[in-house]
Length: 345
Image (tube, rainbow, N blue to C red; front, side, top):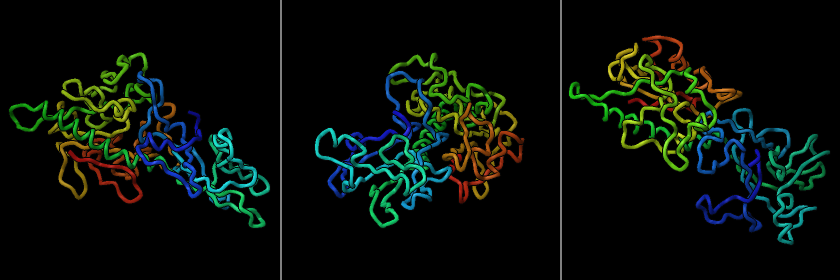
């Protein structure tokens, strides 16, 4: 699947009724290559799709100048309603009806200096209606833009639920008789090379399960002298259930900031007894899920970023990997302008 590859919207795969435009034609669809569905039985051959993934598709407004997808808000997918055929578009035969150019429009000189082409893989694309200097209609495609932030905003609650449930299960499974509260695992070191992969499953040679089970559980290990780092990937081996395959496959653990106070740590490692969250009760542990990269931030090239300012917008949530207690153990709930999520445990 090339970046921006174009075809009909797969409504049946999406569990939708057949969707048609005003001309009774099925909708068209372009998808960013970074967000395409991963297929095949073996984990490890594709880049992961998670909150670090940047979209790249560009869409221009009907004036052909203003961007509908400014930096940090590029499209992960675009849905087109093609509208009535324009001059040069022929839709009579089956072969003609398979050609995107007979439905999706192109705007070139003199209307625009370059070329905006909704039928071309990768675009750049344009949202109609577009008219020439004489007022003639030259593009009538209507578009709906799905950004990376839209995608990850929908996925984040599910990721948060998976992490919270697995950490709760770990704490229950590691509950001593006295005191009654169980212990959370220590985080992984944020700069451990095993925790900064960008390809799904890290080292493909270690991905031994070809069907449905596990990401190699030796990757991104917990560290007994760390209390603020990344969510470790080797903590599920003692549990009856593991995170979903999609969670492991797409390296979600490596994107998640995780901290635990000394009182609840399996191996107390120099954090404050509890973690402070402004306006909230102290937490035994917490994790932060970053939203999609804003602006020009790139987190995963050539490897996972070790700089928290590239993950979180709030200054109080950016010093856990650089400062010590008590400053590093103080947090705030994500504020306006942030797309992050904080979960206290």
